[in-house]
Amino acid sequence: MSGFDNFNTDFYQSSYSVDDQNQASHGYSNTENPYNKPYGQYDYSQPMGYAAPGVMQPQQPYTGQIFQPTQTYTPSPSQSMYGSSFDDEPPLLEELGINFDHIWQKTLTVLHPLKVADGSIMNETDLAGPMVFCLAFGATLLLSGKIQFGYVYGISAIGCLGMYCLLNLMSMTGVSFGCVASVLGYCLLPMILLSSFGVLLSLQGMIGIILTAAIIGWCSFSASKIFISALAMDGQQLLVAYPCALLYGVFALISVF
Image (cartoon, rainbow, N blue to C red; front, side, top):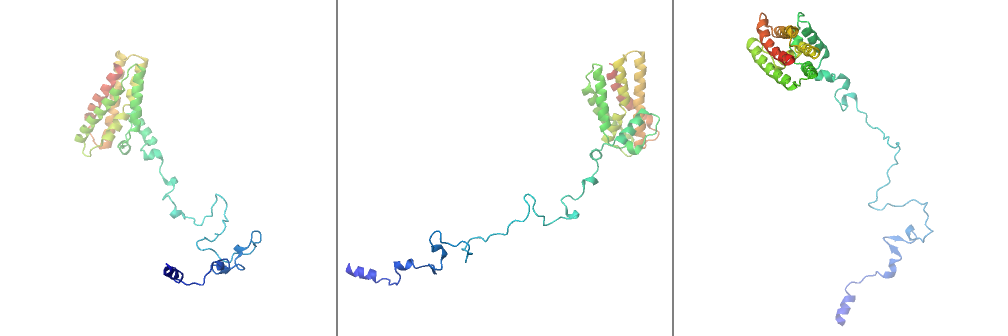
């Protein structure tokens, strides 16, 4: 054991003593380290001589206003978020295909059977007017105590499909289903007048029969005139008017009975 103690004391010889710890720490003496001064004797007005590693330097103070940051980049008009201005966009009704001027011209063409139809306007697929006229026709029937909305729309769909097939067989250019539905729907306007008369008086007498025949001829003549002008079917108006008269005759039967 005595040999082990001698080995332990002689293992590492150093000149360091515990008393030297209070005299120096990390290479700074008591006179040079301001943190070793007693409380109340530290001079806070002296600047720091060094910065501890890992500690961020203070940033520059914010000179702008609150909620109003300084704009450093202003995009040019060509580099804006939107490629085009809202002023250059077409109106919403025009994008939906609703043109009140064309609707008014088509309505006048139906109301004036002898007026020459404009083929460029009549060849458009416009279903806004026909939907309104179908609703008006069903509403006038409802005033007479007849709830026939289902028959109105069902007969309209079957009639448009039949006329679409017939006109594609008769014409050289062909026609779209939307154009057929648009023309037949606009020419339903005189039938609304017939159902309106049915609210005020009975259509089952002699006056009603004459009025009903005149309305059927009015609707079929207007529809055939528009189809002839839009599809360039010269000399075939009577052939087109006959199936149109059959279709509007069914609507007349709903109005009378």
